[in-house]
Image 1: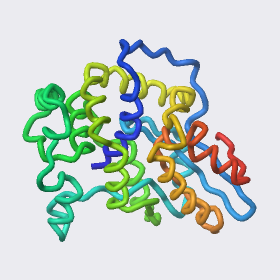
Image 2 (image 1 turned 90 degrees about the horizontal axis):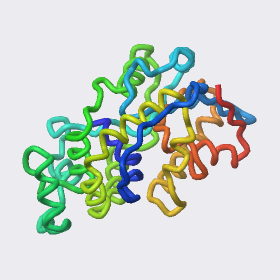
Image 3 (image 1 turned 60 degrees about the vertical axis):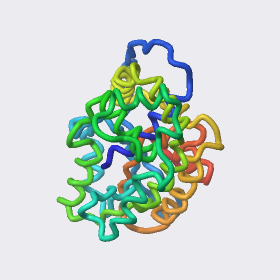
Length: 274
């Protein structure tokens, strides 16, 4: 379920009114979303991913940097399926609302029935972030494999150390906080625009147009900001080490005033787009 990373960008898109989705016109291609971050003791290469991108969207420069690395680091380990989890109760707790709660109680009648109209199967007991994932999957066909899948596969094939900035349980706790019933309702209202918005965002990613993504995090009060700050502690550790490290993180969390690259620069690291 690597597609859970899509929720960060999608919930940001849903916080504004729903004007028609204009066609995106890309500028002339920019440099790829690939940066070198250097400090007094070490450096790492950061590559931006996008949930709708495919393995073909990885530029040769990124593959080359990954092949030179000794460690591969990405956001969170994959959320396991039920059969892969020893504690079924823990798995149920991750995905489903507690007993006595339901989406029908959390949403208005109109929003709940609109959600059911778009999503096949029962949805009432899902947490809002799980329902949102189902809703967006109904509106937009996610690629398989994704760009993230391809990077992890290449890292395993190269026998690199594969490490994560957080566990899947930590990712679930973040999603519980970030994707509220109100956020889900906003996306239900925005359903007609999801496919267009995602198509435009993918085109901007392929063009290297970071201006499209710099306002993904609208304020320092969003739940993703402390998450990023926790990741920065880990990135500091990698920068202090001597391993050549390749880091893959979603573009919306990298650029902009509250993004990782700005915060790394504020810490005194050199940040250079390759």
